[in-house]
Image (cartoon, rainbow, N blue to C red):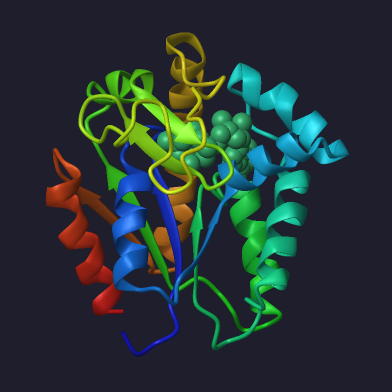
Length: 222
Ligand code: ATP
Ligand code: MG
């Protein structure tokens, strides 16, 4: 990979983004990841004003307001020195509305740091509720585990730190349904927007092992 890579990673909740992302970062360590959900959960656990506000939306499966998200993620990009034409980074979960996408393009255009690759994981949505229900997370790091196919070495403890794993408050059937509906509603306009910019790609497959090499290839061929 020679060209600076600024990648947006999209996929329904539970589509396996976290798993693919982990492998991608091992292969391309220069890709600084920013996961909007992790950024928000960190604000919540720190008890900031933004965190308190965001918590209300997240709990019920609604989206946090666009302006809050744009400010928060732009700040993260600035902190990792990501606003220049040499920067490499990977966005996960942001932008996820048309308005966020437009705003981000506007900001990145001024620093010549625009996105050059958008990858959507296109996964059979019948498979994913079960994944969400068996998912546990280590909140400080965002590491995810599945009780079925990726269990921690010690039950309910993070492999790296030994700290507790928790169930996300929004990982239940009712809230999940809302998150999924919301995703399906927003993805159409986003797809159209990035298709017009010529950077949209969709990858599908039944398992992460099938999907991962396709994503890696896209990054290589950029
Ligand atoms: P997964 O955990 O599988 O990635 P997800 O994408 O629904 O599923 P997160 O990305 O962790 O989960 O986001 C959790 C919640 O945080 C969302 O349901 C939403 O309320 C809020 N959120 C995250 N990113 C954004 C965003 N770009 N715009 C608005 N709200 C967001
Ligand atoms: Mg996520």
